[in-house]
Length: 198
Image (cartoon, rainbow, N blue to C red; front, side, top):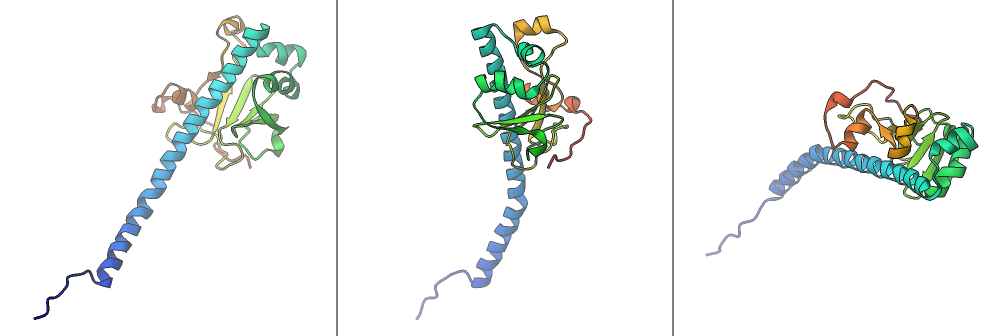
């Protein structure tokens, strides 16, 4: 007598592959989205740290704050501030008018890119717009902690400048503050244009 070998039929194998494919199609986009959000959060923390380090180094070595350049030597000219301050303390690889940048630039006038791919745009006031992945999409501002994108707004607190000279650090508000505080609370959400700056 012949013994029969047990095996899966072609139909059973194909059905199993279809089921695995459907499950993968449903779960992979969610996993990728969560990965991107974590990359954006990490990028914000890196940019925040780099800006603070530049401020502290300049103050420690030369006794000057960025206000010395913004309001003094450069008289509110962002291009001059980049040249005299940021380029001395950060590894800048490219500078351009914000209107020519593909990154999210907020209301910035001049955008500079550092070697790690982060784009920083500054205006004539104290605002710094950060796109943590440079020219890569989505190039949108983060206005809600539940919808994290690659653009964040930071600023230098001029109003309380004597305190700033001692603290010498960048400030954040809204979702950027929540991320830097390791909070997922929606109390940090703010209204704003969440559109692309393509």
